[in-house]
Image 1 (tube, rainbow over the protein chains, first blue to last red):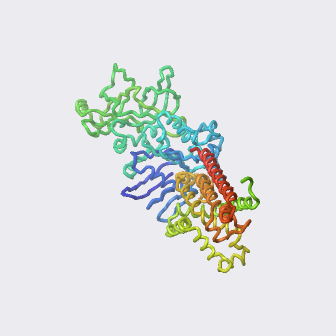
Image 2 (spheres, each protein chain N blue to C red):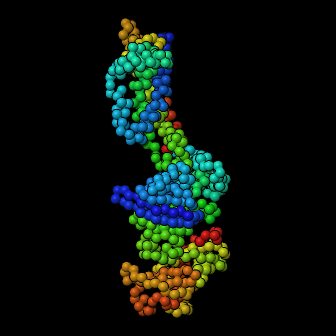
Image 3 (spheres, each protein chain N blue to C red):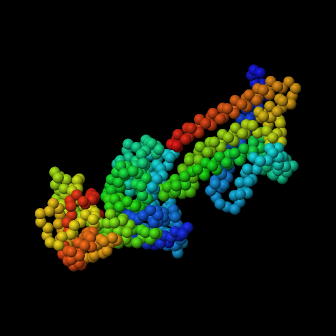
Length: 367
Length: 230
């Protein structure tokens, strides 16, 4: 468990954050630029000292201003992957990778050089110097270097933000592998919903120096804080499901979410795989009776549990579809009135197969 | 104007020796002072800065005179040095070296300080998260990254050291084979009737040495920068 409660003020900015997150797991600090995400992980790493508060990781107190505990950064064993990689320019790739390995206590060695090289695809780069690497390669080396320092926790400060879209794909799949293959807890900072969708097991939403909500992404995606941060176009429920059948010929898969099964267009998956999908509220159609004769392949029965007004003449309808799962649908006020939508009513949720964004998790242990 | 006389070769050897020894002795201190000036915020920084730079603005003869006052065999410090370490500075090669070191010290400190200020503190923070303590970080990250500046400082101080005159002649005097370096030999030659040819040879020698130093410095700098990947 990572537990923190800290206050830090300077130059008219105030960070006042509380967070509890399970370990191992991948916590995403998600929020707009300037909301204090990086400040918060700097406090966790010890690079910044809070004015007041306490930081605790798996029972070890890292910082406690009241008890005057302040474990030095170099003794925290918290890996940090910086936005700009920060590879040592006077050392080659191999020497960069070994920098933390040599300095980690022998008894803590849990992951070796060979394993890291294979996990991150670095074998080919060993003889290079940092300035010869692409942005994505640099981030992978930085990631390997941090991993080899045998960290108890890995912090990632927008590790992909300095990369363009195609370079991101040089790093993201590796981050997914780390999450699935290692049990090192991670906290990563991001303002890209896509990255959060692909990587996070737990999300903390930050706004103006505060953690305004935290929990699983599925839960968080239904709340008003999430809507405020992602903006109206990206509002939509995130669901964790399991692939029950695949149809390779058509690139389709059946994914069980809640009580229903969605037939979605997701290539490259396998039966039994965990899959996270986001269903955008603007793509979800509601019907008051079982639909017939439509091209839409997915109709899941559910019960309306909440109607909330959005800016403009739109209503956001929350429909629970069983087993704790829910979706959001954006409907006009006119349609709401015409259909007589109200809390407690049974409706059918219609989802177009191509509208869902899905991400596979390779292991079944974590959602 | 053919080959150098034994006395002139002596002056060349002595110049190189004095300049080399002065930079070798002042380097560790220059790194320490450069570090204090660039990184620490203690109240005496300004005074230290002024003190270090004083030789740049004082007449060299004044520096030599002050050294003489502080360190000659009549002074307390001079007697103490002689009694405890057997060190005698005035009229010795050691004295010429000290005078040269004092004069070139500000040049070295400046270069090192600039180098230190240009080191990315983020890299030191990264080393910290990887488990490196303060001294470890300095040796493994900061110092190598300062290397271009340290080399530049060394070469500038060395080149300037070859040409020190006023402070050296005042403090260590003009003893052939002991303190008579190239500039002192050149000065002596000019003072003697019929010394024009010797003076010209020594002046040309100084030019060649200077040029060699500059070219070497440039080549070294390029090599180091390539190593650092900039």
